[in-house]
Length: 253
Image (cartoon, rainbow, N blue to C red; front, side, top):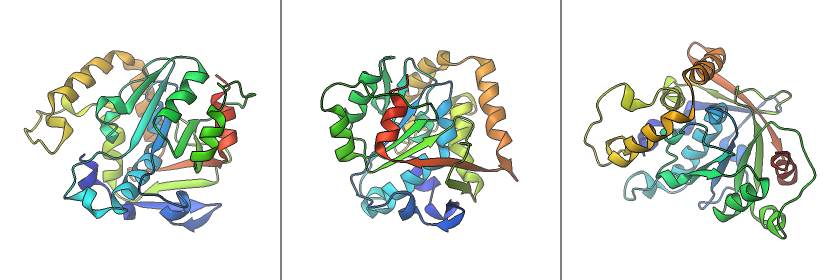
């Protein structure tokens, strides 16, 4: 829940089709009950969608000021680890642990999980498209509910992307860095009930997920992130697609 104080929408610069754009343009027809789902299929892969996740978080809190003070709620974001766990992304506030959903290697189970969580904005890895082979009605449920879909790459750069999100403040790199190196490894946890970092369940979760990725895979993720930097800030590129294309891409697995 640290993202409440850490992030604000003015920390990001957005372009769509190379023209300056607003957060509203990224998430058109925004609804206060919107939910973001990010499919992850490689070690620490969700880092490539860092700015999209964080921009969604700012919109989640901005749409209802009570969420920044009176209420104590985590942003409605869900990470779907496809096939196996790919390293905890809880530093982004995918918390409590149920927000990181472990899904079998069957695309049918993946779409079921997305629908079960009522995802309305979906980010999928850059994979080839395939013909749909989901359970009856699951595609229709997704088409009826998901209003925005994005393709991202674990590197942070999708080829021929039409959406870019650039960090303007070094605080936009706090969460990606904490995914690469969890905060409990860096310093003692302060006993503050307002932050998940003071929750023993959070520490146990990070330690449990530490075995998901190897030191070599962590080094690759760190190098990929740093390759995006200009003065310590990253620019990410995405491709906006319709919901059907997003479903075709997760059908590829």
